[in-house]
Image 1: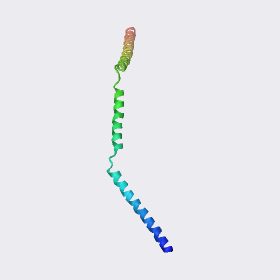
Image 2 (image 1 turned 180 degrees about the vertical axis):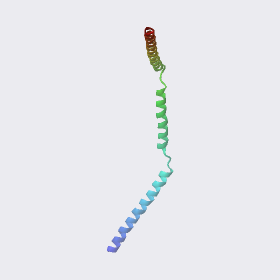
Image 3 (image 1 turned 180 degrees about the horizontal axis):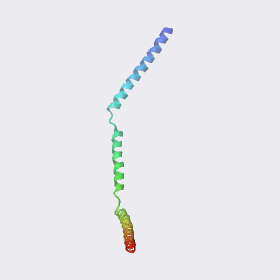
Image 4 (image 1 turned 135 degrees about the vertical axis):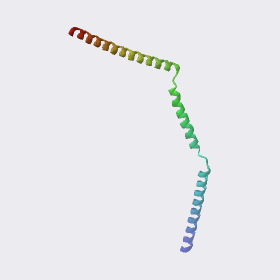
Length: 104
């Protein structure tokens, strides 16, 4: 009786194992044969993501005008600073010439 009970248990485990192996093989074939839609989605997402940030770099005409005004203001400030430096250098040179003339 024990032998037939053990034999029956072994047969059940064998059938379950066989079913598990067949299921694993079927799943592996399914995974191998199915196209990877996620990869395509990620590529499209990356492209859209890059396009979004490239569009932000291309600002609207209003923003371009504001940026142009800011650049013009910076140029004016730089020119004014250069003019001040030039005037200061000219004043120093004039002072030196005056001092030399007094010494003679």
